[in-house]
Length: 244
Image (cartoon, rainbow, N blue to C red):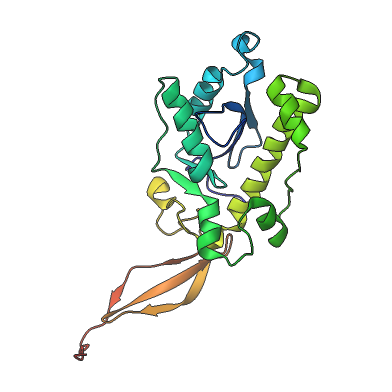
């Protein structure tokens, strides 16, 4: 599926040494903009100060935040509950500007609200929806070697795992478009209000009507992403509202 790319959405994921940002630090992060094949990677072992202090993630977190600020919206899997909070905690620790919280699409929240799955973990969603890319399992010893500073069977494998998560999350973003919960309205950016607000395509069909007390609303379905959206309400004249 191709989206109208006037609105930039960055898919991101981080790998850390701990679930808590006060006792852990970021090992690496990956970012991919929708419609762009490039995956940007930030890993602390590629910064000059790493050999002196292997816990110093300041430059990696700072560069990651600078790239994410270029996007109109951020998206990830359980990213509002973990990734975004972890990044902002580390930014605050290093006395750096924080990322915004209001331009965020957490796909985990969307799956939890719109789907009925046994588990909302990304690996289960990938299996349930038969996504194109798969999450890769990672041996705990690989994490230990990455934290200790080893690249072979260490950091290199963690980065590869992070990139796979990015591709799987991007697949989930496209697949969940028809559920359309929390997605930005692309028409506000393009100015074309005769297009699908979720993917920007102009081909859609009538999908029934919603009837209110004194008006009817035409519902449309996008032929590209499958999302549904409504038109302008049409007031019905000479309608008598009966008292309850």
